[in-house]
Amino acid sequence: MRKLTGFWRHVVTALSVMLVLFQLYTAGFGVFPDIVQRSVHLFFVLTMLFLLMPANKKKKTDTVPWYDVVLSMICMVCTGYMILIYEKILWDPSQWINSFDKICAVLLTILILEGSRRAVGLTFPIMAAFFLFYAAFGQIFPGLWAHKNFSFNQIFQNLYHTTNGIWGQMVGLSAGMLAMFGIFGAILSVTGGSQTFIRLAQKMTGKAVGGPGKVALIASGLFGMVSGSAMANVVATGTFTIPMMKDAGYSKEWSAAISAVGSTGGQIMPPIMGAGAFIMAQLIGLSYLTIAKAAIVPALLYYMGAFVALHYLSKRLKIFGEGCKEKIRVIEFAIIFVPLAVFIAFLAVGYTVTKAAFYATVVSVIVTVFSFAMATKNPAQTAKQAGGLCMKVAKSGAESILSMAGLLAGAQISIALISQTGFGVKLSSLIMSLGGNYLFLCLLLSMVVCFILGMGLPPTAAYVLAAAILAPALISLGLDPLVAHLFVFYFANFGAITPPVCAAVFLSSGIAESNWLKTGGLSVMIVIPAFVVPFTFAYNDALMLSGSLMDIVLGVITSAIGVYFIGLAIAGFMKREMSLIPRALMFVGGIAMIVPHMMVSLIGLALCIVAFVFCAGNKKQLKEA
Image (cartoon, rainbow, N blue to C red):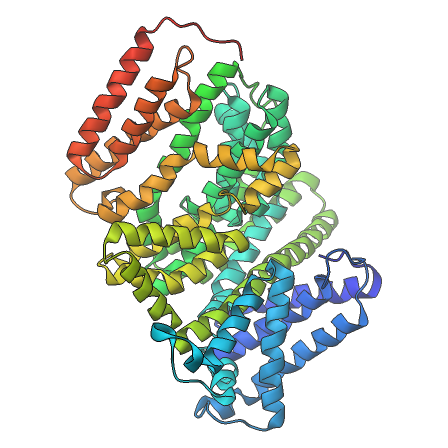
């Protein structure tokens, strides 16, 4: 983003404050009609996006060129015009009010795609260009893919005049729930959440074997639940934990991999899970708490595998921690955990995510201002600090909304065209055809598509597209909608650490100055169980805490034991270094124990026991690391 000064800095600050106040007001006191709510939201978002994000990141970043001022003004006109005419098109979207209406429809579509290019890259403009061409010239496509051409009016009236197009569900989520959650996350971050989580992690595991690495995993996981972004998490916590790990004796690659793994896992770990889980709740019509309950065991297995591998690697390297010498004050705990408790409590009693985040934000401000008052005991100084806090939250919250809205608005255009042309249904049919209607093959194909989407998109955007394209195919094969969506949600998130394009790994490698490809390989190796678990709950939802108590207990226990042995195999060390054969037996046996079949699990357990006994009786001495 541009680092503006002078006049433009004041303009962006004013827009940020107005955007945050608008979102707070509508979250607390009720939203406007859909198109109005979303138009006002994009009015601020697109205007700020062109003021803050340069067309070319190599350009000078402290001024706003004239053409971006013009683009910002066009965005204001196009979104503002919709607010004026929405009542006229409400009853008949298939009419043009006048020629200016047509111009606004085309210009706003182009500007949203340009804004998404600046926010997340070329993926959405390229996809949208393809689907626009596909919608207009469907008859030239062969076989399954052919369809009757849509006219200019049909395409752009659908995009501009209805809630199936630009003003659709993704922008609706951005304009309501996700914007409020972005503000809530911003206040937790501004009030020192990442530092508190790091010190808390140091208190919990700092003196243990591999203390610095475990601190990084815990801190990244805790902060990642709130931030909802693996990349933001790496920057917020990795800046502190990666140097700490390197100083303790971990290699550059291991330090970067641990940070990337911990940061990515925060997005699948309840009770918050970032933005993706809230989107899922809206898409499949379930409460967020239902999704959090289903996600808890797989998320714990993700971190368990990472902890086991890290623990035994640290034993091999003889790395121990020093703990936290700083005392964490009660008010520091309160600033972070009281708002989180309020958020979860409001969800538990049936409030919407938006309303829960609103009240949690209000409580967070109150607790933080109280901490200022306790520290200064000076009303004037407290008021000054409170004002500074509100300005920081407005700026940070607006930036969070900006990045999320930019990618969701771009995604919405592609999703609208996918729906209009029936492309998603056709792709689902193709996946089922290639998979021969065999669930396992279709799951494998879906996993690959998720990784491909995750290469060029943030995890939330990858999930949004995967949910539109892949989830219907999996549901048609008999999967429960929650299982299908969680499956694509997990693999869309894992794209952040899966080479060849792995954004979380790129960032952590940059901080650690490590080889990114080796770091990506280590990241995948650490969380190998996580790549098996989604296939497991696709066949047996016991890991989602569904079914009989006996099935749940057996499923959780066998999976946990399997994950433990996979972690041992990855580390290659118990009391002494392990040779290749027992490591391979443990690895294969561990994966077999995660498979939801009793006989396979028993064979896996036998392999693991044989390998374990072999290692326990082997007198081979530890090699110097």
